[in-house]
Every structure is written in structure tokens, then in C-alpha cells.
Amino acid sequence: GAVVSQHPSRVICKSGTSVKIECRSLDFQATTMFWYRQFPKKSLMLMATSNEGSKATYEQGVEKDKFLINHASLTLSTLTVTSAHPEDSSFYICSATSQGRWASPLHFGNGTRLTVT
Amino acid sequence: SQKIEQNSEALNIQEGKTATLTCNYTNYSPAYLQWYRQDPGRGPVFLLLIRENEKEKRKERLKVTFDTTLKQSLFHITASQPADSATYLCALDISNNNDMRFGAGTRLTVKP
Image (cartoon, rainbow over all chains, first blue to last red; front, side):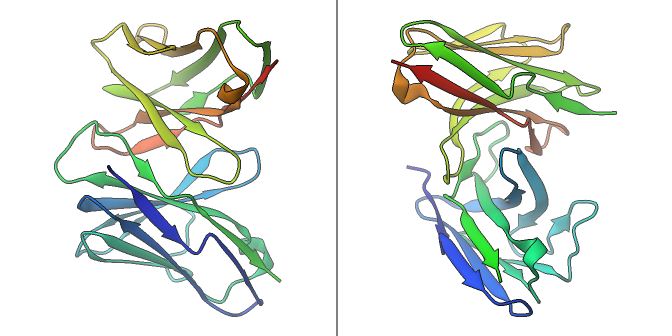
């Protein structure tokens, strides 16, 4: 149980285009989803916290107009990288927690490798 | 400043030995701490959670300790196997609201 599916696993796009990444909880309801960025040999950097039906909360230094997050249902959150540039190339990972469960584990997707050419 | 430090970027051990990984934190008072395993190109996978009132937690060959005075958690893998080779991340809830922040991880290599 507690499976999170992230799609696509890899994407290559041209500079200036936008890319959408989907994160789905397959067998549980995720009231909260988190989006991270990870650089090689570095830890997960939290970008934003997404609650179903409300606006995402972005971490300091993360541009909300560049990284658009939508959490329209209890099982789906999307991250759209708008007007992508080569410096946006990275590994993006989502995670989700179950409703009302404090101290519950985070369930992660398998990440999306974004390469902007 | 607030920090979560896993003070070994990499750890190499021989198969069968016990691996001990360290997670230290400053200026946090987490109610619980978690450990995750991450394989290359994959998302982290939850291993263990330990609460502030628990000194030790075990799961099969894994053991976690949590010392709130030292602000430190130790993660042990006994009878290590090459399949245990991965990066291990510690994570703290920094606001007691499931707001987890991660250390940089320790890359463990178990050699046959």
C-alpha cells in the first residue's frame, strides 16, 4: 500500500518551453503533497507544500510563478516548470502523506529527471 | 542557524559488519525523526520512525537511536549485505506538523 506514482520519469525539453510533472497517490488520499528538487549527491530541497484545494506554500527563494503547483484532488498534484531554462535541469521528486496522520511516513514518487537543452 | 548534518558523506564497510550512520541536528526540537533509504535515480523509501520519548527502535537488521540531549540519531545496519548499499537520509519534523527536512545523506557501500 501507500504507492505514489510520478510521471514522467524523464523529460527533455527545449529552453523556453513548459513541462508538467504529475504526482498521484494510487491507494490512499493525500491531503498534503510535497515537491522537492535534488541536485547530484545533495539532499532533498523542499520547494513547496501543496494542500488539496488550496494554494501551495512555497519555500523561500522558490519562484511561485515559475514552478506552478496545482493540487486539485486528494490523489493528484502537478508541478509545471514554466519557461524552463538549463539551470532548471534537476531531479524533481514528490511525496505525499495521508489525511490526519501526524508523524506518518512520507511516501515518495520515483522522481522526474528534467533536462533542459 | 538550524542544521541537519549527516557527517559522513560516504561510508565503506565489509559485508557482515555493522554500519553505523550519524545524524546530528542543531536548533531544532523535533518530536520525531525518520530514516529513509534512497537508491540512485529513485525516490526515498521510508525505513523507521522514532519519537522523542523513544530511545531505540528496531526493525529486522535495522536499529535507530534518538538522543534528544545530544541532538543525535544513530542508524545501525547489522550483518550488512551488498544489497544494503544505498544512500540513507535522516529527516526531522521541524514544526511538529509533518514538515520534514532532510539531511544530505550518507552513501553506504557494502563490499563483498
